Picture 1 (cartoon, rainbow, N blue to C red):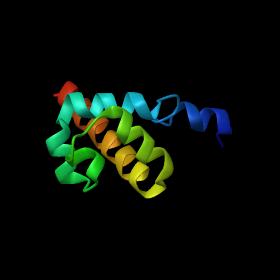
Picture 2: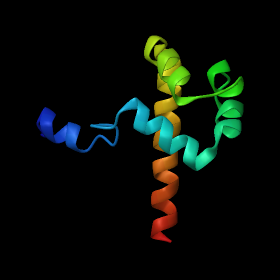
Picture 3: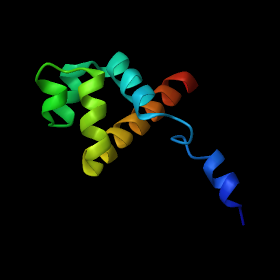
Length: 83
Protein backbone atom coordinates (compact mmCIF):
# COMPACT_ATOMS: atom_id res chain seq x y z
CA UNK A 1 0.00 0.00 0.00
CA UNK A 2 1.37 3.40 -0.93
CA UNK A 3 1.28 6.49 1.25
CA UNK A 4 -0.50 9.69 0.16
CA UNK A 5 2.90 11.31 -0.46
CA UNK A 6 3.93 8.48 -2.79
CA UNK A 7 0.62 8.74 -4.62
CA UNK A 8 1.12 12.51 -5.10
CA UNK A 9 4.66 11.93 -6.37
CA UNK A 10 3.24 9.73 -9.14
CA UNK A 11 0.53 12.24 -10.03
CA UNK A 12 1.69 14.02 -13.21
CA UNK A 13 -0.29 17.14 -12.21
CA UNK A 14 1.39 17.43 -8.79
CA UNK A 15 3.31 20.69 -8.60
CA UNK A 16 2.19 21.88 -12.04
CA UNK A 17 0.51 25.27 -11.94
CA UNK A 18 -2.49 26.04 -14.08
CA UNK A 19 -0.46 28.79 -15.76
CA UNK A 20 2.31 26.33 -16.69
CA UNK A 21 -0.29 23.89 -18.05
CA UNK A 22 -1.84 26.60 -20.22
CA UNK A 23 1.52 27.82 -21.53
CA UNK A 24 2.60 24.29 -22.45
CA UNK A 25 -0.75 23.51 -24.08
CA UNK A 26 -0.67 26.71 -26.14
CA UNK A 27 2.91 25.97 -27.24
CA UNK A 28 1.98 22.40 -28.18
CA UNK A 29 -1.51 22.78 -29.70
CA UNK A 30 -2.09 26.52 -30.23
CA UNK A 31 -5.19 28.48 -29.27
CA UNK A 32 -7.16 27.44 -32.35
CA UNK A 33 -6.86 23.71 -31.65
CA UNK A 34 -7.50 24.21 -27.96
CA UNK A 35 -10.64 26.22 -28.77
CA UNK A 36 -11.92 23.52 -31.09
CA UNK A 37 -11.33 20.78 -28.51
CA UNK A 38 -12.59 22.70 -25.49
CA UNK A 39 -15.37 25.06 -26.49
CA UNK A 40 -14.87 28.04 -24.20
CA UNK A 41 -14.72 31.67 -25.29
CA UNK A 42 -11.46 32.44 -23.51
CA UNK A 43 -9.80 30.03 -25.99
CA UNK A 44 -11.63 31.24 -29.11
CA UNK A 45 -12.33 34.98 -28.75
CA UNK A 46 -9.16 37.06 -28.31
CA UNK A 47 -7.43 34.34 -26.25
CA UNK A 48 -4.80 35.08 -23.64
CA UNK A 49 -3.28 33.19 -20.74
CA UNK A 50 -4.47 35.87 -18.29
CA UNK A 51 -8.14 35.72 -19.35
CA UNK A 52 -8.05 31.93 -19.48
CA UNK A 53 -6.56 31.69 -15.98
CA UNK A 54 -9.25 33.99 -14.59
CA UNK A 55 -12.03 31.87 -16.15
CA UNK A 56 -10.52 28.47 -15.34
CA UNK A 57 -9.92 29.32 -11.69
CA UNK A 58 -13.65 30.04 -11.30
CA UNK A 59 -14.95 27.18 -13.46
CA UNK A 60 -14.13 23.66 -12.20
CA UNK A 61 -15.61 21.78 -15.19
CA UNK A 62 -13.47 23.76 -17.64
CA UNK A 63 -10.36 23.32 -15.52
CA UNK A 64 -10.95 19.54 -15.50
CA UNK A 65 -11.06 19.57 -19.29
CA UNK A 66 -7.80 21.53 -19.47
CA UNK A 67 -6.15 19.12 -17.02
CA UNK A 68 -7.38 16.20 -19.11
CA UNK A 69 -5.98 17.77 -22.28
CA UNK A 70 -2.66 18.36 -20.50
CA UNK A 71 -2.48 14.69 -19.45
CA UNK A 72 -3.26 13.68 -23.04
CA UNK A 73 -0.41 15.88 -24.26
CA UNK A 74 2.00 14.32 -21.74
CA UNK A 75 1.01 10.79 -22.83
CA UNK A 76 1.41 11.78 -26.48
CA UNK A 77 4.89 13.21 -25.81
CA UNK A 78 5.94 10.10 -23.85
CA UNK A 79 4.75 7.84 -26.68
CA UNK A 80 6.79 9.81 -29.20
CA UNK A 81 9.88 9.71 -26.98
CA UNK A 82 9.64 5.91 -26.70
CA UNK A 83 9.45 5.25 -30.26
